[in-house]
Length: 397
Image (cartoon, rainbow, N blue to C red; front, side):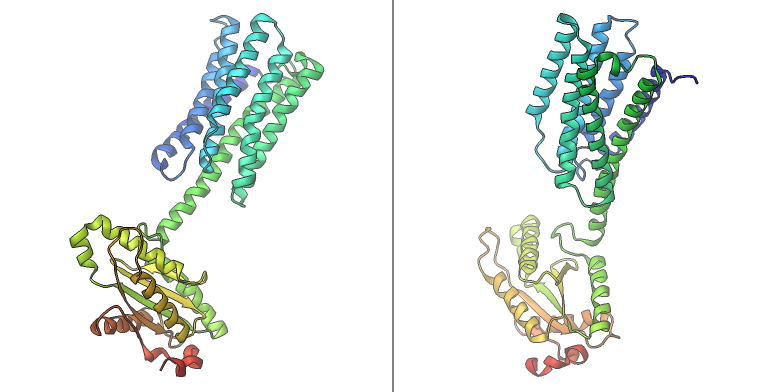
């Protein structure tokens, strides 16, 4: 059986790493603000390509120079992937550890290549350094990764690769350099080299998998949340209403909606500017969210209008929540923002046949009544005090 040529294996792996580097860089250019670490991974892959090219120059430059340069490029590239993974998971890049590990490892490689030639020690120190880089990434995935297939896949690959390089380093110390020489003729060396290069590519695919998962989550959130206030938008609120209405049909629980509008918000923009107005809106969204239960949903419907959906909330309790919101917004905010008041309309789902637009219309009608009655107040729509809300009707009449 014809054995695999190590140079052919490395050439194919180099071409694939180059292609993956281009793909990673393209994603980095498009989503650098959304997903951290892509740039480091792209640069790391490019260094792996450089390492392969440097290794291939052994016939043109002194062997020591080409091998040491290739090893340095490999160490820097794998270390960059570690820094990229740290940034991806929101951790401060361990630059000192990266620099120290690379410097100490290269010092050992230079010593055991030029001063005291010892191939086994070179393999051992190189493997130990790479093991630390891979093990750090496996730890990051285990500690901070999402409990999802993408994280399990990526973390599992990192753990396997860390174990493989550690075994190679230990084998070099125990059995000698000939046992782990990847350029030696033999089926075992060819299989190990092919597997190592394949795993390097798989690791890139693994990182792209978790990055894609992160990007998918971000894009989904963008489609359902208001970018300024980070609360739901109309689409997200519609989805939440559909879920709660299904529960209304099943359990016959009350479903209450608050329509909230800032009073004289145009004056805030005119006097203080739109930047301050945006800060006021973000503050109002934060106050409203903080005054609600975890099961409640708040959305911004454009401009200065907010809507709150309160499942399993009796009308008199909803009025209490509305009053709490109004009182909190009247209090000094401690942020140097201009004071603001709100008018609130409250409506309860009349029946399971009523849709969201009808419920919103009644809440808005109550809101307009609050505006006409002097603002900074709460009005309740009594039309919906039937059906699921009927048990509490006498408490709010």
